[in-house]
Image 1 (cartoon, rainbow, N blue to C red):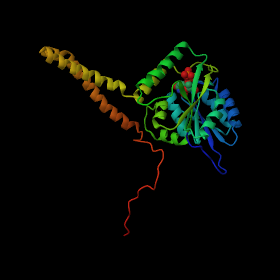
Image 2: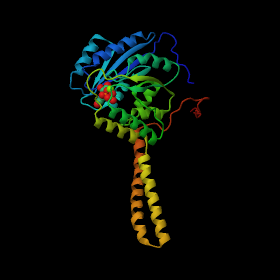
Image 3: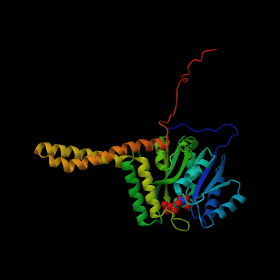
Image 4: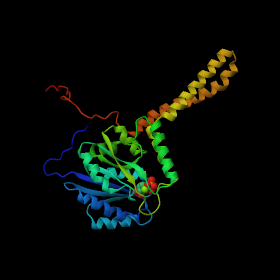
Length: 316
Ligand code: UDP
Ligand code: MG
């Protein structure tokens, strides 16, 4: 069980809510109203709302501007074009100043009313509180099936386990946000990166509502791009597979050629194996480079005991 968080004295902990928005003019005012209603009821906390306009072309920015004129808790960032949901979430995390940061979709599919429960669990000491979808209303069968398959495939090939059936609706502690902001990965897959850090995680369950208005902004192309991101960032299983298949074919070729005393057998499966193996080896180097450019730390220290060693400095 993690340690409880305490904020003694006069300082009130601050909750930031990050809202990525892409062409959400029909909903953003409602989202703001419901978020504000929930956040106001959280007594003993300060709060801010960080809207990230991911290059909308439908007046979303103007709507956010008018919200910010009325409500000083609203801050906003506007992208020059559509960079995608993951980039918008990252921009929000960088902008957020809170002790805890909640990322929530703009379309009210994720109920803001879950936030107080997430905050309660955060105060109990959890660093990540994910919202797990028990059901998904008003979504197409294709969307449900592809999401179901996507999470399971990703988990199967990922080097570390991911929370199933959760999107990006979650609360993150400041310490973890600082780590995320410190990585230089330009293809960050947020959900994967979060679980990589290994902070204590828990979840709340909810029934996913249909979108309040408009259509899904996650087109098939965007879903595929997200899957590619997740696969590339989370695992080298596809590369390893190539190394293994190549090595097996090469061994098979060598073995068959030796057994049957026929060098031609070495040429067919053997050559295929050697090539595939070579691709796998190149891939391993690529993977090393990828890890380097992702900018994740080598390790994450959770606690330390004892006085850190300091070398003696001799007086001059
Ligand atoms: N979104 C974004 N950039 C994009 C696509 C989506 O910021 O390129 C936002 C969108 O406005 C919403 C959230 O990401 O707040 C989730 O998108 P959506 O609801 O369309 O996805 P779905 O719920 O259908 O998976
Ligand atoms: Mg949605």
